[in-house]
Image (cartoon, rainbow, N blue to C red; front, top):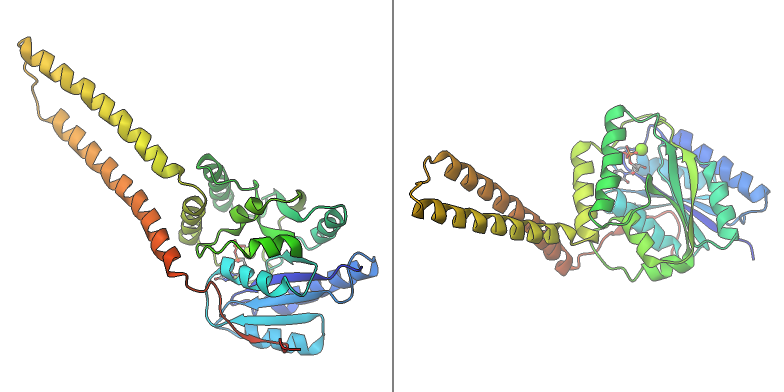
Length: 318
Ligand code: UDP
Ligand code: MG
């Protein structure tokens, strides 16, 4: 049976890049079809994430021009992770494999061939891993690498230097559909599904045009989400730290009593003040971390939909 591939491509305000990158995607699809690796029934699915520019109009006209292009649009902007999820869930019943890829040309499309090969060799998940980050700014590179190290330290297993460029089989998606959490961090969740996986290396390019939608603040919140969605290690660290501080205070109290009894009165309030400030800080940070988790629980128990598709370029009933 021929393999039907669906490229899932989230787009948010990408009118500047879509006309160029859509042609690149289509050329690569034709090439893979010609090589006999995928079927001609494969499709390029754009997921418009509530763009404010003409992105959706471009997607609709592309789908009229060529049957290989299809598109869905979200009722509003919900962020990259939710857009990818919407596309994957939409594709899982219609295709054998999906490849999620950014629409700005940063993910090297030629790596798809290696991914499809790995699938034919029996892998159900294939991670696209950046072999170099030369095109990123020094700042983005260091913060991103620190981010992966920190995530792993905190107990969230993620593939180093892998973002959201990956192949997933319909079978894995079927199981993944049971992961109902609202806080999404796909690169940490997909490995939890299991099944045979491998990595394919690629060079990260520069954006074709336009600007990144991931400024430092969004990256930090993604990092927080990643850690708190995948691990409770931070709370455990607080517990251990609390125990350590209690032990030190206990020793301090004994020392204070002994020096008092032996006539050496403890002088000065600066040490008291320093300890009070320190403990105050530790308590506030700890409360903050616990608060993060409570916030997560609050969002989870609401069970709000993770995406809402308001329009498709095809008729779903057919
Ligand atoms: N994106 C999205 N919704 C958002 C932000 C971004 O669908 O709210 C898409 C965007 O169009 C692109 C991908 O997610 O295809 C990655 O975003 P971007 O290139 O801005 O991030 P970076 O590559 O700089 O991390
Ligand atoms: Mg990008």
